[in-house]
Image 1 (cartoon, helix red, strand yellow):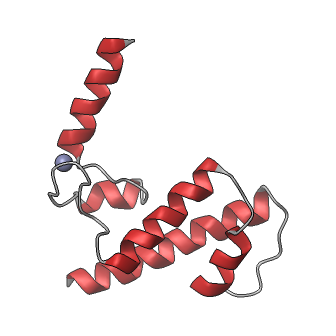
Image 2: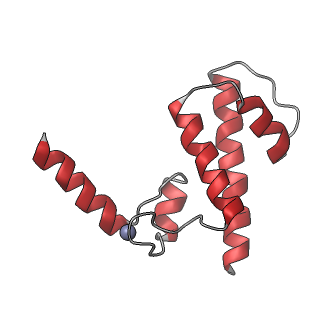
Amino acid sequence: MSVDTQRFDMREVILDRIATILQDVYEESIQEYSETYITAKLAFKSDPQLNELRLALERINRGEYGRCIFCKGDIDHDLLMRSPTAHFCEQCANVLRYRTTAQA
Ligand SMILES: [Zn+2]
């Protein structure tokens, strides 16, 4: 599978998650699954989960999706499938998790 195909798939996955939250939490009726339509619906919502998803879409558009924002390494595809808004690779996520736990 090419990288472009993966990005395309993730965009669908993310748009679908956003649409689900908008419907379930905000009782919006979603007429189309296009990015323009769905991001317009997000405009005035300050939901942290929606915000994460919106940022993931922005990373796709910038061609940065799937790259760790910490070490710039590739994020494991399985991890992205489990958690599409992941922006750390597993290694960095573990380090950060360890630090957070150690400080608490
Ligand atoms: Zn990393």
